[in-house]
Length: 274
Image 1 (tube, rainbow, N blue to C red):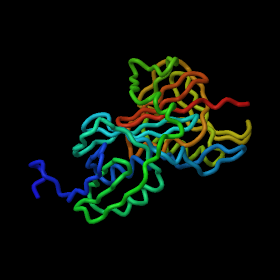
Image 2 (tube, one colour; image 1 turned 60 degrees about the horizontal axis):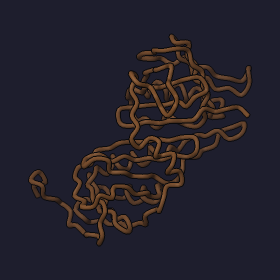
Image 3 (cartoon, rainbow, N blue to C red; image 1 turned 90 degrees about the horizontal axis):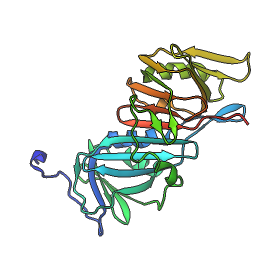
Image 4 (cartoon, rainbow, N blue to C red; image 1 turned 120 degrees about the vertical axis):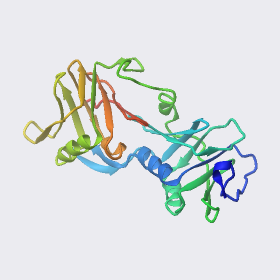
């Protein structure tokens, strides 16, 4: 079948009252859902435990060819944007919430390059060629939809580093692989708390249990601009970025931290010692 002429290799199984129908790369969708799940080490008292954000992802078709995936708890918000190969939906409804673990189990059994995602009163997944089909229920609402709403139309640039009422004072660009190496060192402490500190020239990430039991890593950067800043956050962030890509970090004393990549953004509230 010549897909280039607008035909499709899918023997469509149409849903009544269809609201969304998109074709998307299977691996790209699977990776994006895993990324917004944000599984990793999270602060838990005096140590760290393996956890994740909520078990739900919000998917929003923001353009004919772009799908945004979101997740959030009361401290963290994240968004990943991925391309859509084809959008043949007929309804303006462009949003749904899915149970992450369940949809990933289905997607990982689909071996074709692309998958058809069709949404009506429930979700239908069809593998390339239509040989595999799976249906799963929609989730009515994301448990932290109000947090997600804060970044649905949000963009940030080094020229205008603002989020909500925060005007960021420091902008740092480094590499995802560099952050990963720094956090692997810090995680020897095993409390998933990370102090970000810069004097405007050097950038350090520190993890500590006491003034003696601590790790401090000087992080290589591509650029630093702005003033000195210090802020502590908890929970994993480095795994949110795959491969070796530039990451821009926005800082201000005792304020949220933002990590921005080409196709994703992550915002964490500061950790305030009680």
